[in-house]
Image (cartoon, rainbow, N blue to C red; front, side, top):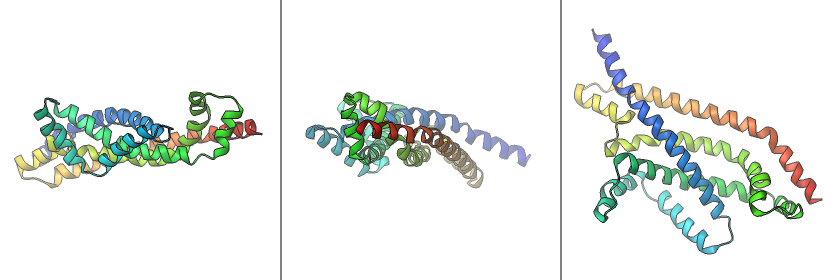
Length: 228
């Protein structure tokens, strides 16, 4: 009977994994788009754009994600912007991760040797072509380890959304603890699930790093040849 009771608790807690995985996928896609856009914008020529984007990055890196969640869910409705818990969580965590990711993108682009950009000019490539065919392929490989770490942080960071009532893994575990008084089973369960998700993501990024690294040297050599 005791074993069956434990199994019921584990199943109830694990049901929150679906919400956590869904949040991670949506947030990951949004954060990637934000990181790329902001990272590119901060390496652009417009000082106004750079100033605005720097302000966004400093705001989201310089304040707690819990505070940002509470602002989005509890304060914004006071000024007429009413977001559901899921919308608030998705937007806030994506913008938070995007701010950190943009620094990874910016640093990788700025680390590309100046000769590579000169090669793009020598090959008469437009800005979009240079980014797509030369600069981004070379920046991608150095970015992947840091982006992999950020992805793991996003998975673990989704636990914060339980603070605004989303029934993710952490919310379910806390519900079990409050209702039954058992703490070990629910929290051991979510630790195992978070570990599994983080490990799976790490393997995915390691695979991507190995895959894209194969063409990295060829891209760099092609650009160097154009510069001669």
